[in-house]
Length: 157
Image (cartoon, one colour):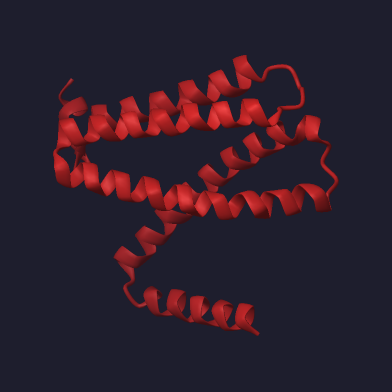
């Protein structure tokens, strides 16, 4: 039982378990209940789902603010706004990918859902491996920096 109150990344383990459970429940509800049958999702339903998930995210942020204090709350809200801003850019990229591969509208939600699940796992692996590399070998940051500069120049050209 003491393990639940031990810290992982400066927060008690029970908080991480609580957060992961919320995310898993929402994912199961989304694909396993609400969108179990393949069907086309209209604009009205998309807007309603977006409003629901944004509201849920803001309510979670309010809980973070109340439970962990204003600094943690501001950090959460800042990250939330940045992530939402980046998500708007992703919408256009996803639309281009769907049109390029001619994904029928009826399958777009399922493809998007599993794509996001894949990205979450890959991002977790990349962050874990990157953080481990940087903590063990600080010179790796120079390789990462060179790679970013190279890709930035390549994109610019």
